[in-house]
Length: 169
Image (cartoon, rainbow, N blue to C red; front, side, top):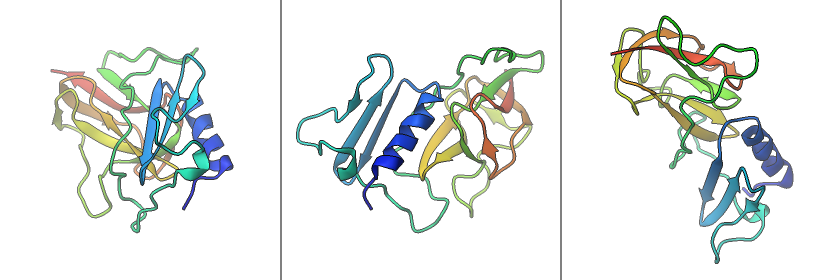
C-alpha cells in the first residue's frame, strides 16, 4: 500500500507537534527523510523514490506488531509552557514525545515492558507509542525504579503528557 499525500501530511503534522528533530522512514526500499531545522523534507539519498507516494507503509497482519525499525524518540522533550519541568520530588518524569497510542507491551501476547517497582537502566525500552502503524520505542532516561505509570495501555496520549516517573538509583 502506497502512502498517500494525506498520510504523508498527517505524518508531518504529528512530527511537527513533537520534539523529534529527524525521522527516517524506510519501507520496501523507499526512504522518506523529514528533518526539522533547515525546513527540508524529502529523500535523503540518490536512487530512492523521489515522491512520498512511492513509499509504502508496512501494514502488519496483527494490529499491534512493532515496525521492524523504530524511530529514536527524544527521551525528555522540553516542558511545554505552563507545564512542570521533567523532574519532580518523586523522580524523573518520562513524557510522550508525540501524540499517539500508548502501549505497555511489545505485542498483545507478551508481558509489559515494565511494571511499577521494576528496576530500569537508561536506554531500556519502557513502552511503545504508535502513530499511523509506526511504532516508536520510548526508553528509560535514567537508571532507577519505575514509581508511577501515568498512562493507560491502549490509550491516546498527548504530546508532553507524563507517561512514567522514574526514581533515580
